[in-house]
Image 1 (cartoon, rainbow, N blue to C red):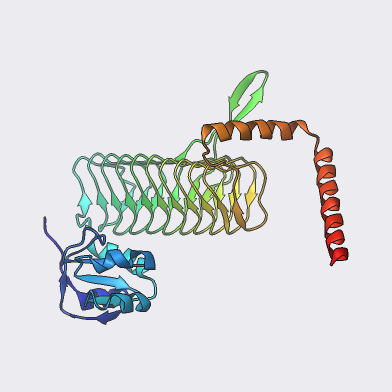
Image 2: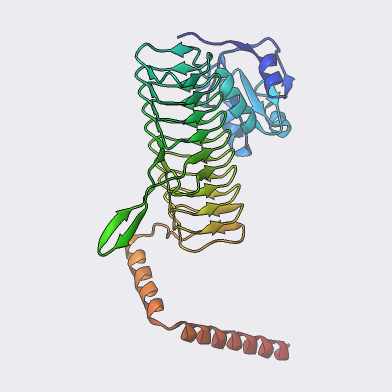
Length: 357
């Protein structure tokens, strides 16, 4: 395996950090504090890792100014930045293995009307349909199927066995991982006389710049309007996004979430794992849903929302279930009246204590 070598001063320049120590120190990779060797650089982004950093063998550390002061007696080579985690994220791209191959493999099948950039790579057994576009420096790995009129922008990465259909339009720097399907038929049926009548899905999918989609996801095309993922959306593995959904820019969706049709999710939202969102809802910007939340009504205010119940010892959970059932059996008006009575009693006690003083 060949390694890329960088001098410490080069890495400091890339992250716009302050170099402290040996400028020409050679480094060949990133590593965790516990596994780092002298040829590695590691990062420390919180006080709780200081003791671990003191005994680390890393040749250099990425730290804040305050952390550097704590580690000065134990290490000599630093890159000092405001945000070590962000600097680490930048350097992962420096040491990442790059796909340098370009051109079209002999087993690929490409329609004559398709436009493929000379700098693109088309892997083995890829099938590309009529009037498709693949932009500069885009990589399409083996066994992908790109149906008619699909457009892919520049510097995209399409992993193996991805299907792009429904005339999907994919912008620049989009990453789509293995076995994901973009633009498949939405789940639309009209019930009549005890039968389901299929609704043809006439819309498409629009994916903005810098979107990342994990493996084994399905993003359905719209029935009439398009399904839209705005710029900077990141999606984990095993996510279902139904037809006509719109996801606002820089929203993050964790694994196993399901979003029903025609729902609008705002910008900068976070959906933790296994959330379920009903259809035809709107969720405001800057909303966080904790794991396994079920959303059945629109959310109009930013904030953190939960509906899942955390794990309890089984005996406690059984008692909690009984209490939930008891609450359901009590009419809401009675609960409100009881709360009002309790409030009155509290106020009466407070008045009594004040008189005694």
